[in-house]
Image (cartoon, rainbow, N blue to C red; front, side, top):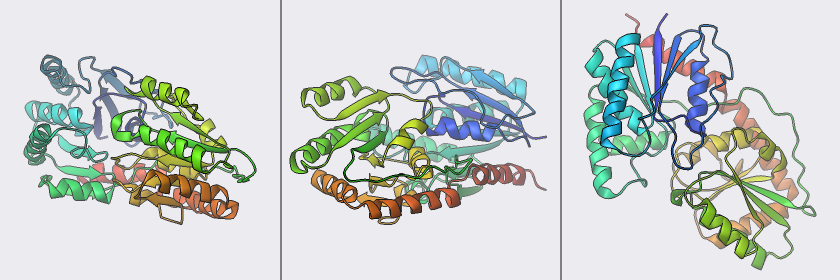
Amino acid sequence: MLKIMQISTRHNVGGISKLIIELLGDPDFEQLYVTGACEGNEKEFSFNLTTPNPQGVKIFKIPSMKRSINLANDFVAFLSLVKIMRSEKPDVVHTHMSKAGLLGRLAAIVVSRKSKLIRSYHGHVLDGYFNKHLERLFIFIEKSLGKITDVFIFDSISVQYEINTYGVASKSQQQTILPGLIRKEINSQKIFDSKQRMIILVVARVEQVKRIDLVLAIAKDLKSRHTDLDFEINVVGDGQLKEELELVAKNSELPVKFLGWRDAVDEQYIHSHILLSTSDSEGTPISFMEAASFGLPIVTTSVGGVSDLVEHNVTGLVIEGSITEFSDAINRLWMNPQVLHNLSTEAKRKSKAEFSAIRFRKKHSDLYKNLFKV
């Protein structure tokens, strides 16, 4: 039985942790999971497996491995990874997130040339998050590590295009595997009634790149220009800007609630009518898949892997313009219940066809096994 080691920088609330939990449940492999520590406003995600693996899963936590750069902590984390790999001798080292991708692959090379190395890119990790100097450094590192990496996995075609544009390439092969977390079909039927209150849901970290400030601007525009629209916006997530933006919403008397982190967002998906995203940068957001499975149409910006998840005027609306375009689109949808119903139906159809957890796990399982075929 192959021994697979999954490594993530930290096991925080978010899509990547959910995907790793899904992979750890695969009973065809002996599973190891090495992860670091959350910090700041991050919250640790539950380690409960959605599908228990009868082989069991060994979990190793490295407190010194964190998202922020600290040379002393990073060196200690590297030594910890080397120690764990020497003891466990994994056949496959599969890394997720930037810090884990760097330290995990370097440790694997120090310990053994026999382990197969896989690097998963969850989103646009080289664009929009760092200043230009750090961006060039990280591109150089990714290029160098690509020469020792057997497989790159991308969560969308747009992410694969970006990485290839920078000249980053794997030693052997590349695959695009759309994330999948949906295990069952949600039977609830959305009721859209323009005479009732519209519940708008936002699921995102409350940080600059996610542009929650634009959510407040949209709320203000809806309130001032579409006075007949009764609406409420619920923001699920936390981050550095939460307290500041929460105060702005309160002082401006906007109908925006900040709900903080949630391990599960099912209750919010059930009681909401659309999912709104105003982000400047996205990979392939898991929240879009989850929302679609509950029949939520998605109103979003055209960034990252969004085009792989949202079909414009079919499962949602892709807005490339201004705040007023967002608010006009939202108002127009709520005043046309049949259009919302059609979008909702198609969102559920797409979710069932393309966002399956079984498909996601099988693609990884086949990949792991094929690496060792003679």
